[in-house]
Image 1 (cartoon, rainbow, N blue to C red):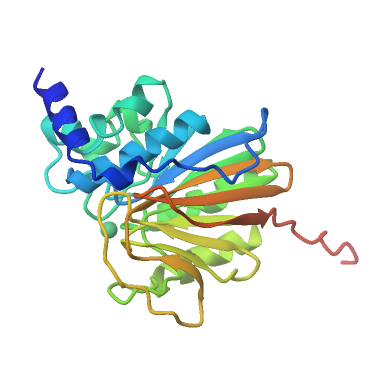
Image 2: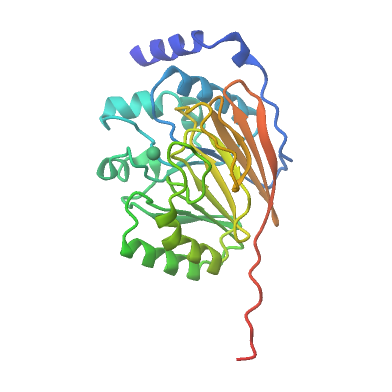
Length: 290
Ligand SMILES: [Fe+2]
């Protein structure tokens, strides 16, 4: 009863502008792979609920089949009450529709609790992979990039037969954020593997804004860390910056059709703040002369 009352209060608190209709710019083809991305969502604040309302509105028009979470899934404590307030209630509509979430861990997350929290589908692991159609997803734990994990990433990537490989983790290896910036040390460990094994797209959060970086070594990098918190005006338009949005919360939608990955970024007030297409990265044929 209390839950229902809380939801009602949140919905009533929405500004009128929130009822602006979401418009889907993606192809929305019948048999494509459709998924959504949220990062740094678990604040439990009113704005998380307001963005979640747009997320639900987008789902009604664009029924994505799963959601990737880019870490900082639950800020503060990780009690049952926190999971309820910062995840189950805001995303109730999506959860009730049977859409699974697949989480990566952020620096504010309690690994032991979250990896065993069923709705995050982590199966007790801090890093893991799963395949959907033509795409294999690699959820990494960027807060603690152990040697074992790097070894696992290399093995999992090298064994993957998926045409598309998409990695996601909390910390961005490229970023124009004034507050945090790029995790250059992490990049040194992990990027050579992404390059070598044909990763096409890398998704990160941690910075509380949306950014699309200039492709690096043929890889598309996105930061989407504003589903529950915002660091307003935090993008410094530097050499890696291609597009961004740092004045309101946002989430991402993706659609894979053959060698194209379409994306759309939607704000709390239903504006489309970026959209486009990423091409699948194809590795050159191995040199057979030697
Ligand atoms: Fe973070």
